[in-house]
Length: 124
Length: 158
Image (cartoon, rainbow over all chains, first blue to last red; front, side, top):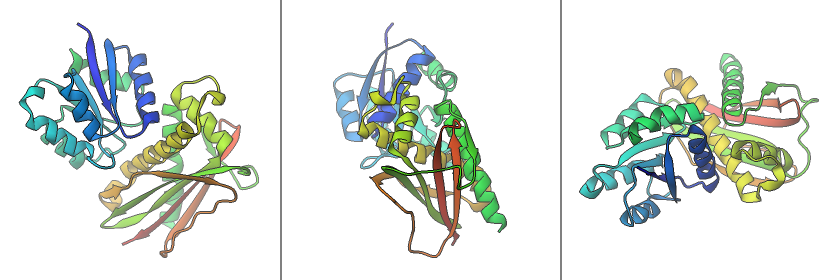
């Protein structure tokens, strides 16, 4: 079955870089939707659920952690997996992100292999 | 002095990690005479603040060099295919990733700290400074033995 991803990052360039990396990872993603902030992400999700939401932690306005909390408050998105993306690798942050409802966490910089190792289990 | 030496190594190692992983580009520390940055410049900056350490990291290169970096990040064949916004975004993201790598390397010594969202400015003869009394380490480097780039980190113990 075709897999869909929602990519949330305030940098359009970073979204392009992540999309390139996901394509190189070849994990069977059919469609990648984009959102530039938390509000846009919620709007995109209201139009149709995706299999995995990839979400940057540090964003202006509604940050990634706030977005995860909002998404997890809505039962309609209970089956959707969330993979957080950040440059930060502090154990406390990763623990908090998972506690708030994210399924996993990947740190930048990443290679297609690193993305594949995190994304493939969430898509299967 | 020990902290200054440590910062030099930490920033250069962090930059090497990012450039090699994201752009497949090599980076090597060099002296002033080798690293010329003249022309329309871009400076990316990001600040950090914690209970023990605070400061800012700046990355400076000419626009043409930043175009090559952005093209490599985006997997494009030529810098001509990259727009000004993408070049600026790419430099900001490099600041973010280098700072993330720096943080991972020093968090055990200095504790956790908050990192800001990066910003980028362009112009000619740009110089970096901050008002507060800080130590300053400047690291000049060559990327792919082709063009120069400058990393400046200001920091002080709180």
